[in-house]
Length: 453
Ligand code: URA
Image (cartoon, rainbow, N blue to C red; front, side):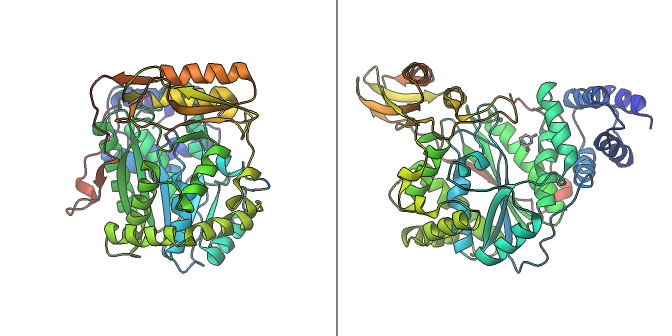
């Protein structure tokens, strides 16, 4: 089909065949098809939706646009974990060492922060000397040696997604379940791991604002992974408030180290253990997620997880002494306490606004390629359901200047909603999504635009 006819067919709600979708993606990756035609197609698809078969074909075509990691030299079980993105979400820093300690080989290709969400690479690079640009050969050798690597995706993996994601970002076409699922799963499939755990975030600090939309995305991703022969599970987790108690880069690494030391008991620490448990179950390392969680808790409390994190830092050129002495991590000169302004229960948090407040301090970037400041960020010590007293210190801002700190404090306070009555804490995990017993072909797939930002 000619590209203009293909756009017209999608605009008019007709299904597009796999061959045409492959030619579209290949043509766009080769820059034979210009941005304006791909943008028109994406908008038509955003509005009309995609059938199950189209979603599978789109994912295959994106996967075929570049290389795949060859993990055949690894004895396995190879595992990967992906978060759809949130605020204060540094689970990889804790889960990856625990998974390696449990005998899994974890290859984590991570991203950078964009907009209000943080990125694992930025966080890791706040450790002095830490490199995240490993070659495929170095990555495989490192995983073989110490069981884990956390690094940037190489340019030759799913180049179609890089170009399409940048275009979707500026044409208001990110928020379609099939487009998000094919974007995520083409990268996960190219990453080569046998077991894939998806952490689909839902709430005010996530792409997905409702559990229904998160479940739809989770089901499509699980179906795509399963039909490609990978053991795939999704966990829908709460992002109605920042997950960790800190938001930023070095400050989140500090918190992750404290969790691995066993010094912090928090929702964040609990979720890390849950995710490690699910990975263990998915990879066959434990009989089920509860048993896997128990093994992960033991690895954490024995200090073995922290040792594994030290190995990761050392292997990627970072200063391993940070695990004993977190003062070696960069820290901004101004530390301004945030005070509660009433006696009340914390009822709501606009987590996206908290993420933006951290970004405005310099911890995030609005455009890819912008430079971030690893030393700034914020801590919010209260969670939904906590009771506070007027004047109580509920967090702090780490900033370069007093003005920036005061603006940050104002933004965080504006993001909090209070109640005069006791409030129930939200669940940490809303649902676990596995492939249906009847097989992936019967799963509902994305037909409509999801209600995401
Ligand atoms: N994350 C991705 O990798 N792709 C999307 O489309 C959205 C979130």
